[in-house]
Image (cartoon, rainbow, N blue to C red; front, side):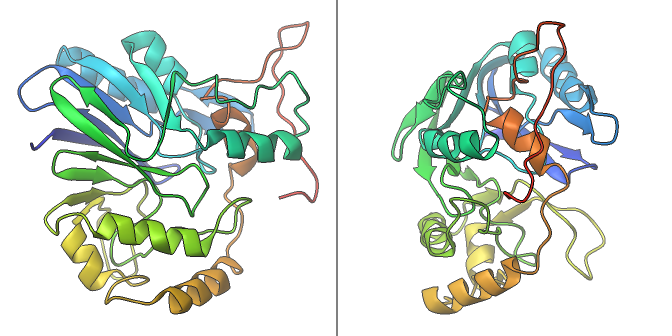
Length: 287
């Protein structure tokens, strides 16, 4: 089955969100949405999410799922806003509990912050499946970038989040708490065992040197042949060394502090204080 796929590119975070529709019906899912955030002023905006809302409503689509590939560290999720306006269930990996435990401590969240994934409507395990109307979604645990990364295989398409980028840009970093280059290698091998013609849809694109246009679709065959980090049957030891040396040179994402605190809450803001004001925490020397 070949789903209908619409991509929405967010310039501020280089994120691609997707609306994935069953080919002969109205049911759809939204993958990796974006809530706009101005870091300097601490204000949110829903322009990116509103583009998706308008798209769905104009086509009279029925949102079954709002899917997260992982707890993003570089943009905020708009899942609750989309759910309020369009419906659907919010889903993520069951390993969200590992991420919540880690960052609940980093941000000193206290016992009031639930670390059981209950902020989400459904937690997925490896081999689980759900449906978008008549179209099945097969769920693969693909940890490495984070412990809670998933790949959603929907018909002839796979939504890999940050695990893989376009072949000329490579693979995800693994140096966040709970990340593992060895796990990432093994997860990529799972993805590359899908049929060569499977379409790969990535979560970000940064235009590799020499490429003029942003891109977000490749294939399993193209990734196996040409991915600059993993292609050509690169071995585990070589990959881990490359990934760890490269990660040591990377700066932290600009929005990592707000993103983690909000996304581990399924896109919800922290509870307001007695005056109705919402605050985020900035840990010092802990990330």
